[in-house]
Image (cartoon, rainbow, N blue to C red):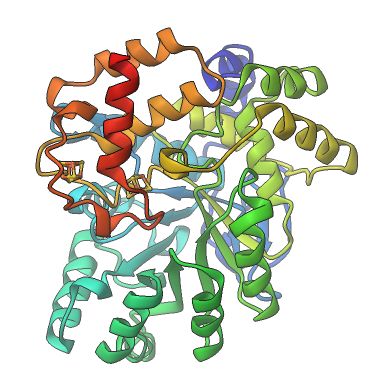
Length: 416
Ligand code: SF4
Ligand code: SF4
């Protein structure tokens, strides 16, 4: 079920929820270790203890990389309203990074949280170690992040975007030691990393240092391939998991008609996204599930899913498996795109993730006319045929998608 359709039916409930939670303080929520979820001092979103408590995080985290945009960047009015609503619901975990929204994400969340007591929210930021070449550059970047976010300290601070090559570089740079020093200075509370590589390198990283959290891409569609192994590797090493991409870059919020019919029959009022989130949230070593929300509707849907969070029952798992069979997912080519936007900006202006997202929805059972309408709505220089094959995007894609080739295929299909 499309999130928009679903929301129409629950507007009244959401409004009541908002009223009911206004004024709830999240102040000591982060130090409360019990997995609570009802209307109480910490808000209605279910929380999970971190490493046995007493510190806890909400099970749903707000990813700051897909904020609503207007003509000239982040739509601050809409995005601020979402942050306020999130806090009122007990969703007080925010995840940003140096390059999200071209650096504007850090500034935005700094501004949006400025009027809230520092202990009322949890902020995760990340060191772009792969771009840095000296201790001085790490210092400058870290100081700039503190200035942008106005946070004073980071609750979690990660080495960003590790894989084989980036881990080697981060080690030479002394990135982990740098962050541990910041921790001793009280500027970082907990240390982690975000990861975009295969399982072998993940195990090397996980076993090489003490980590409080690791951020990896997990989703239901990829569970039997990459996701399961990544999760098991971190669990074996005793490292709690922050999940990015639980909706596969948005493609799992709306799947094939046949698959959605199966889900709707089992739970007519549940959105497709809620099934995907519940699958991931049911994993016991998941600390926080990030959702890069762009609309208030998505936020309200997620608040419902993570309020009194219910792990999937065996029966519901069987329904999901049936839906997966009906969706007949084959993860090749552009369908591996998670929408992470690391390939952006494209020097020619191609809106790579937007093109892939529209195309993938069509290939996974959507209708062609919807795809052609969405595609036509992109600005001319953002479409696939604007690619000049400069290959600048190739090395940036963590999924190793041959972007220009797949753009050419999309053009050929549109013209065919
Ligand atoms: S290869 Fe095409 S899509 Fe990639 S950066 Fe160059 S112009 Fe953009
Ligand atoms: S093409 Fe690759 S880098 Fe670009 S959004 Fe998709 S997964 Fe991310």
